[in-house]
Length: 222
Image (tube, rainbow, N blue to C red):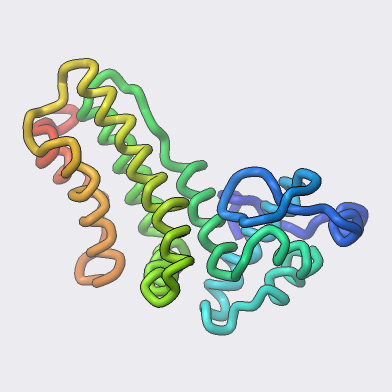
């Protein structure tokens, strides 16, 4: 696992403390019960383990027990913080996006889009991330309750991040009249999901410039 989330096993003392009763809380996709604030080090280790194992064994063979063993935590700790293995991956995915996709203020709508889209597509080209995206979208179709969490904790969070850029452009006065603000996110994320799910074309490095031309009529640097 790379350093995007963090890796490694938690310390023995910390693990024992969790088994003695540390329970959910904090941010992310966990649906924990009230109790002591969960250890951020343990959380990072669990999320890293889930991403690694999903890539190694696939979603079907992924288990809470395997995630716990890889991360050096007790399985009850994982169950307290997340209701399912899909929710662990959902938290891992949302954390990756929050950490590595900026909400820039670079002075213009086109420049902000350039930074946001470049980082978004770079993350989407990570095959482990793309694999998890496909798995979670599929799970959201067959599990309505998880689907609600997926839309709220990942899809809407990504749309909200892009909405900050759109709203800032409106305030500056450089937001084009077309496409309308409500359609911008559909265009951006529609392209991502179509290419990730259908796989007919990659999220190429030139794609941000093509989308910026569509959304703003401006290509940064020209």
